[in-house]
Length: 171
Picture (cartoon, helix red, strand yellow):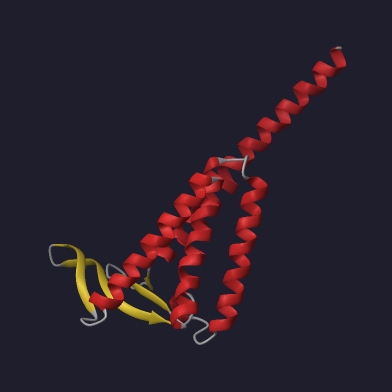
């Protein structure tokens, strides 16, 4: 559990450091090239103050977003404590989710908006930040876990249960 707490702290710290950099270095220039191949832009760094959720939805709903995100983070902590021994993969996914939520909560409390900076230029997409990346990876990992890992865990538990029952019958 200590390693997961350290992971969350590192991710939250990285999120806040990148946002600090964006506020002090990126905001004055607005946007700068980041990753490109030849003349094709892949990702630019673009300063954005997002007072809503993804794609600017729920703009101006600061207290609702703070309340909702707080509940999700608390639920994540509770679930992590309950399923801690089930899967390291699941633990990391939940930790990413919690860290991302806390990273954006800090901004909402401090500024009433979230600082975003990564803009995918290859195709039109939202501008996002490190916390959003954590939440996105957590979501992908949770889907992967639900589809591929948890069924194997359940199958193994069922097999173990059947073997235990047979051993008890033979005694």
